[in-house]
Length: 161
View 1 (cartoon, rainbow, N blue to C red):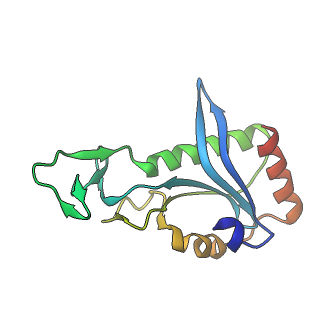
View 2: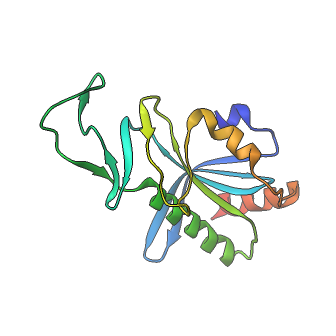
């Protein structure tokens, strides 16, 4: 979808792994374009999810063809928004080491049509989007902070990491 719908002013790099401390951080997609760098955490999951202190609560926890099954157990998945925040921090640290200054956005994209994120999360949490809204969101980001030369330099740095 990104490759088809974004203009040629944007570059897409899939499945990036950055070193952070003793470990690594994997980022599903990184889009580099005029507004800056966008880290995208994708989730291809089904169900209705709500913010929960332990992550995202899936409710109902188990369904068959959308019908809740009785006696379900509480199901909480790790918070994708926190994962997205960690990805943005890893990108910021990477760019800092390379003396690259840019704006970094991060977000979560739900790709499965049978997935819903319900309720409001914290105001400082990364946005949660549906796949159909992703390209419009990216194109609406302002201000434009990178020119074509800066975009190419960032792409080169990420590919040579």
